[in-house]
Length: 214
Image 1: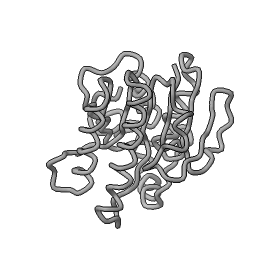
Image 2: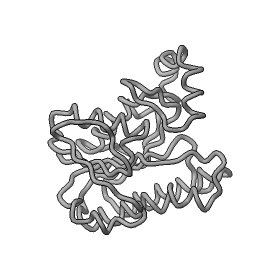
Image 3: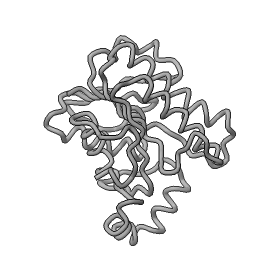
Image 4: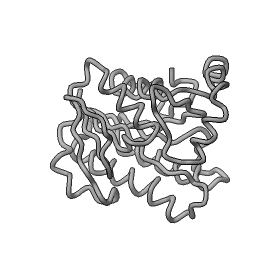
């Protein structure tokens, strides 16, 4: 299996990258990045992209893949709707449309989040809801993953300072959340493993809630 990962330097992407490199049935991983991941592995190739809304410069590198794990995202805190839409809708939809043209049977996993709702009151929920719908429309094996609280594991760290502060503050409690509240909490490694499961066998529903990420 050949896998593409967008957002491999973020917390969720780090988990997806780690699990993909560990998986015996994954032979090649392509990380589409703005800056290097710092990871060295014989399976891993990195390609730099400046504008994630335009994949034309790297389109010739994207053919022949079986799965794409789209983990690129940004916090909505302090971000206006236009800027948030560019990152959370324009970027993933550009990737999805390009990959659907090149690899129509590819499994595309878009990581949105618990509470995503195209008709929701929160701006971020509506934007990500639109993205989920587009991914599902483009791919017969397209999924919207909606994790709740995510415990960073195996060295994964968030790029957002606020989130790092929160994770540090609740670190003693997070194993308990994951163990006793599996409907609402998961880990970066479990999330990565669930993405691989989507590529291998699929899920019964196209929207995958946190409780199913096990």
